[in-house]
Image (cartoon, rainbow, N blue to C red; front, side):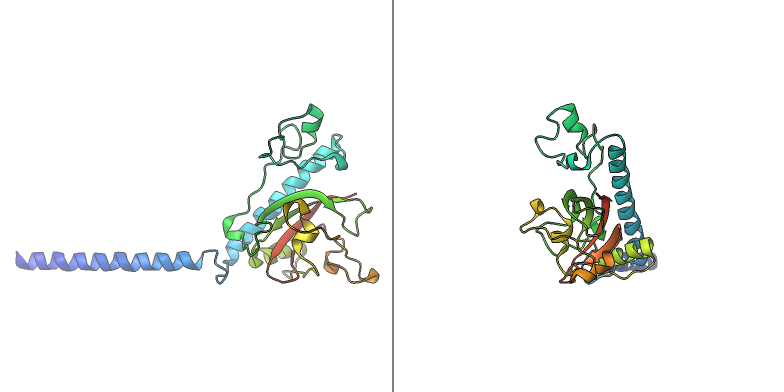
Length: 234
């Protein structure tokens, strides 16, 4: 009887040790796959998030192309946020020009996968930004184009996006900040800078962006990454 109790006690100890070791292993793995700056994102995860980000940009472009095809004018597009008190107000015509409104573009505001984000700046914070506020030098005129950007994503995801869309993981460096070039200055402290790409007319903001409708780039300080898409140009 004593021998039986002794064996049961030993077995319990082994079970407890196994539980502790499993918990320690699980904690280590969770830390390795986390979003900390010191941990690289596994290649399979980076590829998944890159695909999701590219897919959302394609959805937005398709929706705005459809708005223009059915009669909306680019300069009349309204980027009012769904959280704005005036979002559902105004005439039917006004609502039909709102890109996020069900009566307009019907676009669902995107959310970046948390693991795909590397936020180093909060003015503005990481996320999707869409608007008509800046001109891209190589587009048809000097008028403002509609630009979408996934702001402050991880380097691994940025490189994977470029590999998918142009065959190279190289990330071009802007001579200015991403926010100044690709985000409406109503979202941050500062002012916009035109996206110049022609090296023959001086030092461009991004020579590698010439005739690239979509590309992932890094800022001048090389600590923030953003994927842009020129949704509509004019």
